[in-house]
Image (cartoon, rainbow, N blue to C red; front, top):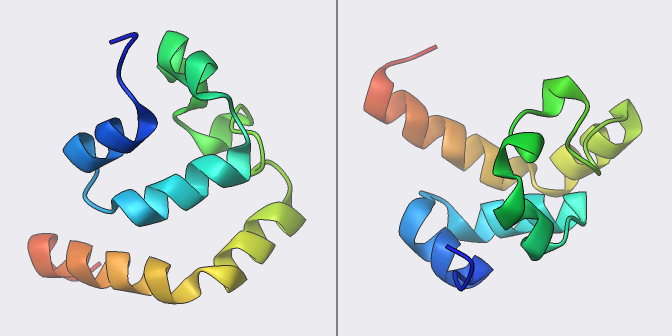
Length: 83
């Protein structure tokens, strides 16, 4: 997995690669570190996801990308049923 590029990883393993690229950019985590310790960056509620720890960070991100977030939720609801 050490030669896996971020672009290829997102294309192969993400339902929303462009959005997830923005999430990774918000966190400003080096791709090398993310590959070495993916379990350290998986859950924002653990406080271990840089760029998504403080309320002001998450609100700013949500406001900037609210349309993408709503589209992702809509697709999720279509696949799984309404929340």
